[in-house]
Length: 265
Image 1: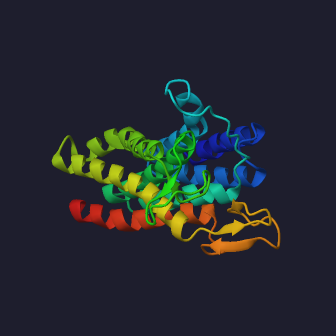
Image 2: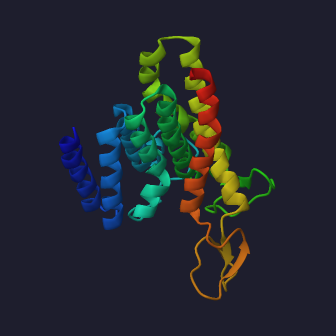
């Protein structure tokens, strides 16, 4: 299995690098993560990881063909670096190693939540950016510039819920295999779906309150310092979008995994 994981993930990572979806560092990080998840974790972990990856690449481009009254898809992402891979996938790597050492249904839910939260947040960002609605913040309840972290739209919130549901529906047969069609299975399915959606909400809150935002000399608000004379107007200088993604995923897992553990111990 480890040899298969080595070869298969090498091919996948190289292919994404050639297609300009990943930088070289991103391809290396993707290979390490994929090898860890497929080689040590439950098989569903790898399926969820690939579902997250390819749905994130395709969802916006596909939906514009079917949903009226949304903006045309024009966003073209730069290749993802190792930082993006780590921010969205490191908790799944932890879950995979932990599951290998001590397999249990609550660690399985740990991994499901990590991917549900990552997918929920990514769908919210990708699809929410297609809305004509002016984004607003969840805590301060004021409108903000489109494209800045911390802003939400109703389209983005709906997409966030369906992103989480998408992952947990894929994982549902595995949950059923553990405990059948029981109240426990329904509870775990509901909690993991809620956790994924909650992860996206947590990401928006952290982005609103703590992610760094700078004002340029031309009075434009940006999230990455571009010149030495850019002024920090809110947030923490080292808190970028990748850190927000990582922290929101970790906080969500820390809240919901112990709750799930109380049901299955």
